[in-house]
Image (cartoon, rainbow, N blue to C red):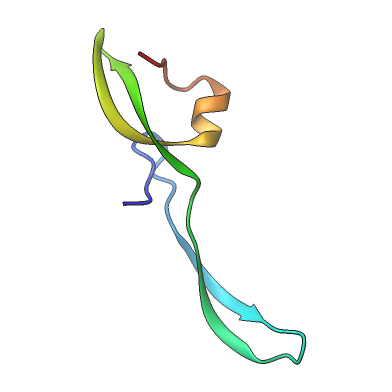
Length: 61
């Protein structure tokens, strides 16, 4: 679910390293919101990341 409909930004995977340097797998999700957006003049609900919302890539309905 955590994928932007505009820029396709999604989850990133990596390794979390603790203070004692124990390593474990970690997942970072994109900051995605469910937003009503105008698409060709009609309002539609879609998942959009906050960087696309702030940059004005979409117009809120």
